[in-house]
Length: 186
Image 1 (cartoon, one colour):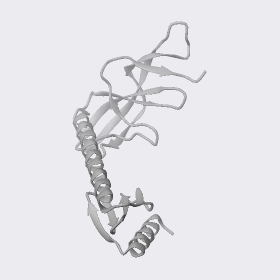
Image 2 (image 1 turned 180 degrees about the vertical axis):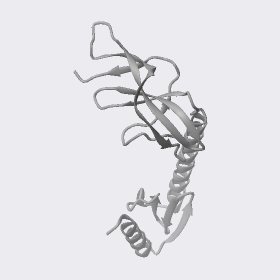
Image 3 (image 1 turned 120 degrees about the vertical axis):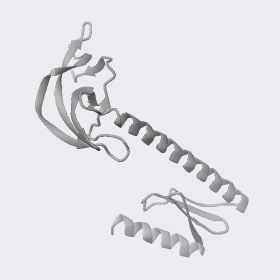
Image 4 (image 1 turned 30 degrees about the vertical axis):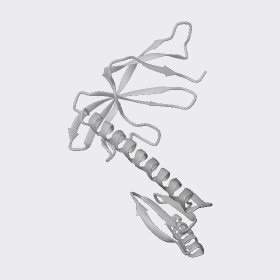
């Protein structure tokens, strides 16, 4: 059974069991009867909540609280998208960017934007100059080395939420000129 089939089955079960009505509030699917309330978010097959209340007033108060919380989440997401889209406007030829990634260590990869056509970027990996921390050989700071090109340029798209996904574990960020911290697993 697929997730969408599981979701539909759960919705029908809750609706029929409680002789409930269904409504939509900005992406929340709300199933309610006199004293019960279930809320599904997105494409989830499991309701975010499925409660029975003592009074209609308690249910109404809880539903109002959930709607306000959802509105706040939507506003925060939109601010994040707007910030990312504004940053994505700065991805122009010659711009230096980086990706920070790793588990139990921090890897920093530097890139240079070679070309931009609409939302498609041509990106060139470049080297870095590492500075080692005092008395340490497994951590320090690094800066880009734009003269050291690595491999062939590749193309990536700016996503609809304003970020550039390089692979399954890293995204592109603008480099502000400050040294970035790196570490290696000792």
